[in-house]
Image 1 (cartoon, rainbow over the protein chains, first blue to last red):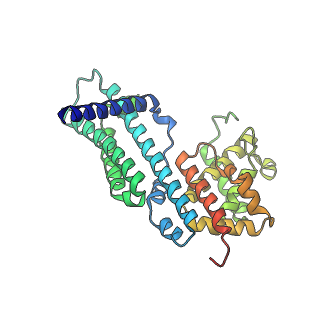
Image 2: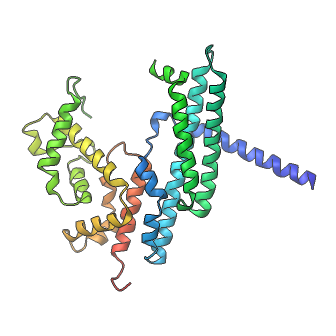
Image 3: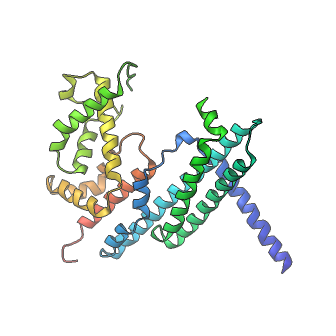
Amino acid sequence: MLALSIFVAAALLLLLYARRSSLMNRALDLRAVTLPSQQVVERIFSGTDAKYVKKLPQEIQARFGRDRRTLAITWVRQIRQVTLSLSRAHARSIRGNASLELGKELRIVLRLVSLLVTCELLTIVVSTLGPVQSRVLLRQVAVTLRSLQVDLQTSPLAAYNAA
Amino acid sequence: MFNVPAETAQTDIREIADDFRQRTLRYVEGNLAKLVFLTSCRDYNSGLYKHDGLATEFPEYAIHAALGLLHKELFEETSAAPLEQWVEELRQYLENADANSIRVWKELRPYHLIVPLDASTVAVELVLSNLNLALDILQIPKTQ
């Protein structure tokens, strides 16, 4: 039993590592990703359209559900890519910087990690329950993104980008 | 693409775009029809926007920049519209077109062209999905 648990844990770790490496390789340059407007994201996760298609034939409902799931997951992937690019850019900007605030750096790292974890969770919930049922996690992503933006505005990354 | 001269102020482009919106685009009914109209001003291969009427008053690079700006703005304004609105837009647009239009739109998918350059992939996919669904919704027999 123990051996089986270790095997499963190792397999999961390997899977996560492989996924992480492939994501790192695929991660885009920040400038290469054009994120959609907030209104577009809200439309994808909104219940209004889902309510409208409920009156329509099953086939249309099914296609609508598939399309919206795909769109939501594409958006989550973009956010994940942007987060990874931000992490790398931030790491580059703080390298060799003597005037770092440890507390603030820790907060930024925690927010970046929290964002990545929320994105993973969001992907799972969107795939299983659909975008409309994932709105709580969507709000969590929005809140973390806003806090991260505030932290990064006064971080060495802002000065690094300005230079 | 044009090399827009450095002295061309963004305000000039803005003025041409606003003027075109007021004098021409507002007479085109419906956002979908407006997007189709702006797309028709764009060359398929080069992506350059051209307009004979504007060409008598403004240089080519300014027309391209102004119509490109308008196209992008209109697409952004429209992309988050509810599916029901897309169905109405499409119904209104196809009412004025050929009786065979729905079949042609379904087969050739000309609506893929209404996308401006550099638009967000997610916004583009949302619009295309909505239009594709709207085409199917319009084909549902009225008794259902």
